Amino acid sequence: MANKKIALVTGGNRGIGRAIARQLSDQGIHVIITARKISDGQSVVDEIIEAGGSSEVMLLEMTDSQQRERLVRDIDAQYQRLDILVNNAGVALDKWVPGADLDIQVMRDTMEVNVYASLQLIQLALPLMKRNQYGRIVNLSSELASLNDMHLGMTLAYRTSKAALNAITRILALELEEYPDIKINAAAPGWVKTELGGDDAPLTPEQGAITPVWLATLPEDGPSGGFYREKQAYPW
Ligand SMILES: NC(=O)c1ccc[n+]([C@@H]2O[C@H](COP(=O)([O-])OP(=O)(O)OC[C@H]3O[C@@H](n4cnc5c(N)ncnc54)[C@H](OP(=O)(O)O)[C@@H]3O)[C@@H](O)[C@H]2O)c1
Image 1: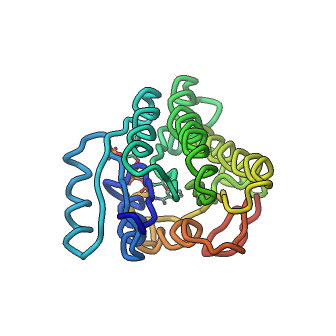
Image 2: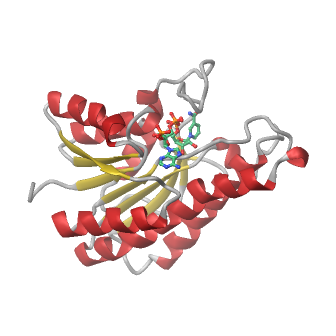
């Protein structure tokens, strides 16, 4: 394990997170996936190990700050490093609800997972990345977060939360300028057939994972502070 990179993929038990975990493990990275129930994550770990990779599952309910802290503490104790953080776990609780009718509690619940928990995981991961002078942070965002094009209307909570995650990406990238070995970027995976994306989506989770995995494994001269879809810069 000593020469393997260590990646943490939240919500790796299904959907795009599962595909990201599998693709990272194909590159020889040890992938820690998180799940709310260990048994949910174990099947993905078994798949990865069966395919010759290396993986384990750790418990994380995103809304529980003590679990967030314990998770990174345990990784530090076990590996003394965290090379890659993929903030993948996310919720879309207000799908197709007009903003004018949005229950504010739904907005809070959305922000808790998509923004506050994701931000705290970054804050917890950064000391390990700074210590090892290496880090790749990927925030799973969405085209629906692009302020450039809010034409659809609706889904205000989800879209605002991902726009906030984009802002966090840019702000932290600037703050991290003195650490060029740590890169933080946002990825729009496209419209992907998952529980969140629905059955009509054209992309498979494997296709949706391509840009996040690219950003998670950027070379030394790769970008930081960007928003990407299909490996191309996407308008904020
Ligand atoms: N699918 C798309 O078209 C699409 C498009 C743009 C962006 N995205 C983004 O891509 C990411 C992955 O989406 P997906 O389509 O793969 O969604 P998904 O299939 O619904 O999976 C969501 C993942 O997040 C986890 N999760 C949700 N709430 C959680 C919580 N409170 N604590 C811990 N884990 C939690 C789920 O765990 P459980 O299994 O325990 O529920 C699951 O592992 C999300 O951030 C999403 O916003 C998706």
